[in-house]
Length: 376
Image 1 (cartoon, rainbow, N blue to C red):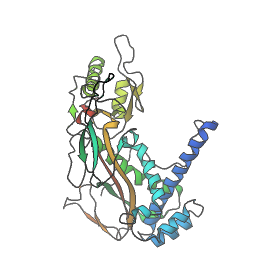
Image 2: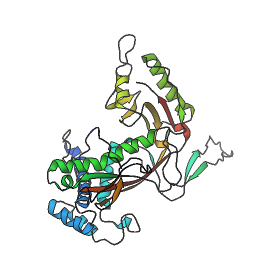
Image 3: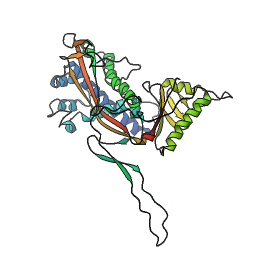
């Protein structure tokens, strides 16, 4: 698998932020510090697995020698001798599960999906119902009959699906005790999953592959055609997108715009006839448009997406690492390509780490998402 070049580092930072240190913020800062520390410990476990060539007993020794003061050394030691596997019947009992959960929390804010507050959490492999039409009610006079109504429901089952990739690094880098080398490993563990998941979530051309992957939330959703890039045209286009959700009966419980930093910057620079900014509260780091939050992602594509997160169903079942230094890999992002070169990890002094995240998503109602292709 090809290792995609990164636009920005994703190294873990376990130091608590210093923006506000008032007493009422101390519990929040403490919780964030604890979660970041757990995430870093899980990344270090993946690092140790790579050094150990995938052997868990050796990885435990590596972890203990490299990070003897880790608060989570005891969990690592228990994990290396635990019965079962983290992906099979023993998944719920894995001692490293709290660390894996923290690592997912570390990745989540870096993805569009993770920044959507208010999505509907659903389980894997269990049938569940979602309400598509509400119950009715009305005024009831004394001695008068009361309205009787029934809701309408759809039945869903989320099959297991996963995002997986293999990071290939040299043994020299993995075994280096330089803190910069550790940061490179941590960054690469997270970045591939982040970039891929954003593209898969938003690309309108991505359809569902049964028993493999979900469709993007924009696939089959309403498309608005851009009328141009002037301030008046853009304002009218975005108004049409909002109107589309309103017409579809969407309640705007948790609405979001999603776009690239480039597009957000272009909107921030639009000026009216009097020189005033049309969208004064948006910029390349995000912001709001008409009080609706803007999420920016480099993988959002040449489009603007408007959605209601309350209408997006998500199943998220964690992440796992598997390391090896003895395999032969087809070094390509399209492994079905028979012409891609085969590389022996052992012969080339390389180590591969497979990262797997179990996640799936789906629109509850088609009207909840609308998108528009743009050139700005």
